Image (cartoon, rainbow, N blue to C red; front, top):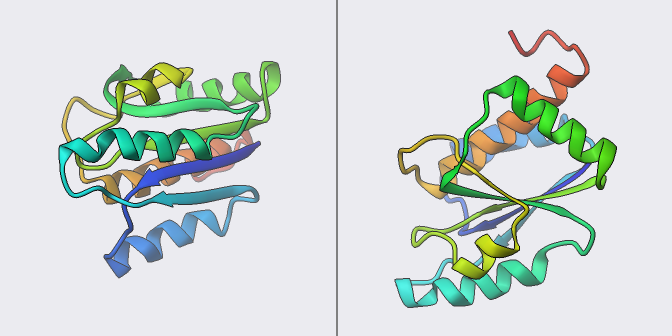
Length: 147
């Protein structure tokens, strides 16, 4: 499974950078692409165009959106496994900036995924997503990390 996270904004907190690094170092093929964060809501379309330009051609695209579908960790692991087994080995996740995602990005996505009805900082959401991808891999490998 090849995973790319396309995320708006740059992480500034060293603690979050360290924690993300802890998980990404243990996964074989995960990359993170950062898109510059626009200053106001009118820049959401510009962010969207930059996001769309970074999506891999054959990827299954999962955009994080508050209105998306929610999964528990085991169901999320099965989603990733089924996608890789039956569709493509490339999965692209998209995390929007403080203004959210453009409608075009949402429409180009194969799945809208929600971790909660609450709003989270996009820097923190990146850490949560990386951990859940790591957890999904652990579940699929019957590794004891997932309890």
